[in-house]
Amino acid sequence: MEVKIGVQNAPRELSIDTDLDADGIEKMVAKAIADNGVVALSDARGRRIVVPADRLAYVDVTTSVTGTVGFRG
Image 1: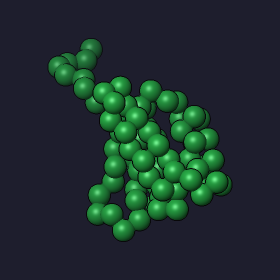
Image 2: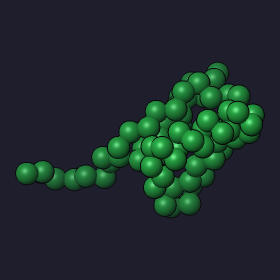
Image 3: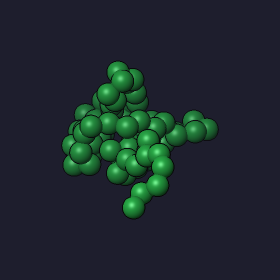
Image 4: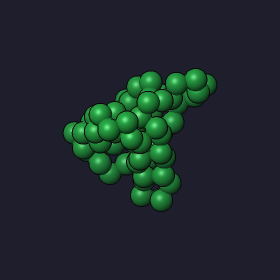
């Protein structure tokens, strides 16, 4: 899943491709907000993004289609 995170007072969004499903991401974000904690996501390459829940502007979860090359038929 591709996750785009908007952070308050930041000029651009953060983007990460993770193996978590949409429900798992939603639960993680809801728990972080309720606990005033952090949202921490990592991808297959070991990149990790950590955002304080009180700084979240939005979280956009979409099916990842990056990395496709060539024609699809």
